[in-house]
Image 1 (cartoon, helix red, strand yellow):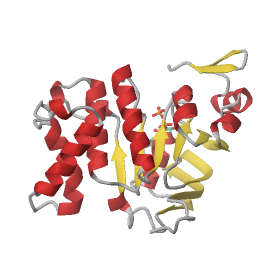
Image 2 (cartoon, rainbow, N blue to C red):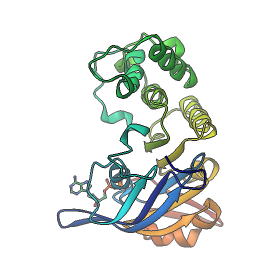
Image 3 (cartoon, rainbow, N blue to C red):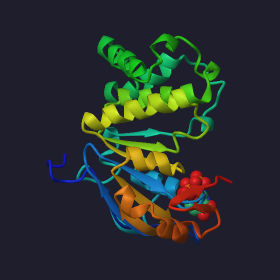
Image 4 (spheres, rainbow, N blue to C red):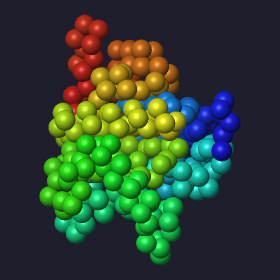
Length: 254
Ligand SMILES: Nc1ncnc2c1ncn2[C@@H]1O[C@H](COP(=O)(O)OP(=O)(O)OP(=O)(O)O)[C@@H](O)[C@H]1O
């Protein structure tokens, strides 16, 4: 466990390659308990790759990633990951409550049945994302935004020290977006560190203390005001997907 002064997550000059394809080069930064960092960059910038490296799912070719003072593999039980909801099978024959309860299996072990406490923690997590009344509904019958909230509830039930979210707001309705933001804010208040990849610059601005601006290389790391500038965004996005309107920068999704 890190001391109060030690960051929850440190990535130090991290380079990741898929065979001969360089996905990330010399990326560095850190996140402390109670803070969030937004990974911002165009498609193919390496945002998902950095999240996978923090999970220990892809090897780091150079540099190092430290989670809670140890390796990603050693700290895995304290890290929760929320994938993009549209990557999951909608026909998954399980209720919303059942998906959330899966967040407890790492604590209880896969061969033991979750007990009353686990069920109470899972019910509370579903309540935190505003879906207590949908507990018995089949996961696949929920809207995309609701499914994303259920996946966040599963992460909350894990009681993580580090939360990783991969583009959680893609195709999510405004009600679900507000519920997701409120639940993430509570996790931060409870002392979790958060990493969120997003194309939404406005959201990064209001909900993250730091921004890591990426396109294979790092173009900036620091508070949103210092990193989400027209100059740095233009450099990271190569000008292709950007529209500049005075001081405002709009990233148009392909
Ligand atoms: N399994 C893989 N094998 C080979 N190359 C990969 C693999 N996964 C990703 N890449 C490549 O690595 C680079 C970074 O991809 P990554 O998915 O991390 O980007 P991203 O910023 O998350 O993009 P998006 O915003 O589109 O999700 C891209 O060039 C991509 O084509």
